[in-house]
Amino acid sequence: MRNLSSKIFSRTDFWFLTIVCAVLLSWIVISNISPHASKAVILVHGKIYKVVSLDKNALFNIKWKDIHLMTVQTKNGSIRVKESTCKNKICVRTGWISKDGQSIVCVPNRVIIYTKGAKQAPYDLMTYQ
Amino acid sequence: MRKTRVVILSIFTLALVGVVLVTVILKRPPQYYIQQGIAFGTDVKFAYATKKRNAKIVVDAMFDELKKLDNIFNPYREKSELYKLNHSNGKWMKVDPRLFNVLKYSTDFSKETNGEFDPTLGKVVVLWGFNTDDPNKWRLPQPSEISGALKHTGYKYVEFKGNKVRLLNGVWIDLGAIAKGYAVDVLLKMAKMNDPSSSGYVDIGGDIGIIGPKYGNQPWKIGIRNPRGTINDAIAHVYLYKGTIATSGDYERFIIKNGKRYYHIFDPKTGYSPNNFESITTISTSGILSDAFGTAAMVGGMEKTQKWSKGLGVAYLIVDEKGHVETNSLWKNYEEP
Image 1 (cartoon, rainbow over the protein chains, first blue to last red):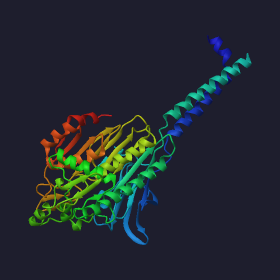
Image 2 (cartoon, each protein chain N blue to C red; image 1 turned 90 degrees about the vertical axis):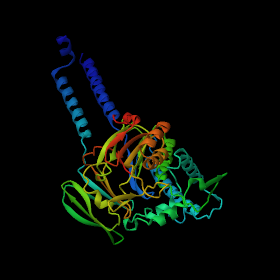
Image 3 (cartoon, chains in turn cyan, blue; image 1 turned 180 degrees about the vertical axis):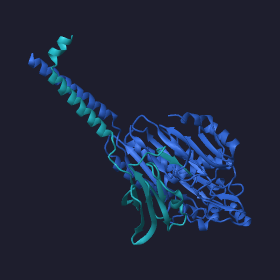
Image 4 (tube, rainbow over the protein chains, first blue to last red; image 1 turned 60 degrees about the vertical axis):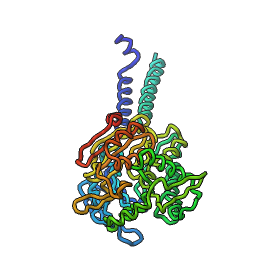
């Protein structure tokens, strides 16, 4: 059996097949790794207003047509609305979010903030009243 | 001999590459087209995957449909069909078939729940100010104001003739307890009409409908919001391959006066909010049923909820006034993937 296989596959063939396998395995591993870093996407009136990195600590204002809507803060991989001009303040009370599947919504100001490329929340969706 | 070796080696390499390619392609999940926005007075999120490669077109059409539905069902928008009906002074009015069907469903559901669910509490809602997003306008009315508003309620004052409707006794319709669920049903139908094997979900402000299992064969994991926690804090989870889920609760539009919580759902008999549950989450095959059932249950309390759920096949999770969680036997079907 050993003689038969050595007749079919030489040492060169063995190394060739090993390299082919290594290339394929590397490709599978690379294709399964997410290339994204943690970001937050800020939508205002349905359009992307800003994409911010969650790796940097920052404090910035969101304006629409020169009108101040809210102040947003990023810190330690999380994002929150620190202050908002809306009346119900649901967006402020949402607090920090850091996981995909979570979002901050301000209906009166028509602002949505969600993360992208972060760790997945322990759920896909949330039902609430 | 060398020629045979080259042939065998080539076949072996090609087979290896083929197996890996097929494995990777099969393993790769369908790409969801996800769109998030504000419509219907709330935040809306759709995820949709279809082999027809027209996901964006369908999702855009779903957003357009939501705008149309808002123009029909929003009772506080002067141009809406429902606003016009509420101000039709008891005259017969031909209404959009969608409004007609939802009104019919609402009054039938009122009969089924012996009036615990009532779509004619519009004047009571406005009196408390819960029709607005502005907490400064939410207030505790005087008892005389409440009894005055209650005189203009009652689902029996909604009459149907052919494709016409009339509202007697000055009642105002508010479909806040049912419209989101109806919209979920409409959008699910749109998605499935485009492609019966499509997958994804529609989420209209926490009223969720499943278009199809995640990646074709996995359940969507859905968190149930803790009524006394933060917005992203879940008290339980369920796994849904299909169907709809909705939640009613006392924690978003409320005021606290003299240590008592008053919120946006009202007992049609008293004009005050009931004290039965902090929240109820319901699962059923239809969004409109899941939505309406939750409101009726908040008013009806535990015994009636148990009775109705058996008749209607609705699974529920209740967080009662003391924060205790109670589920029915149907709910257990969704606790594991």
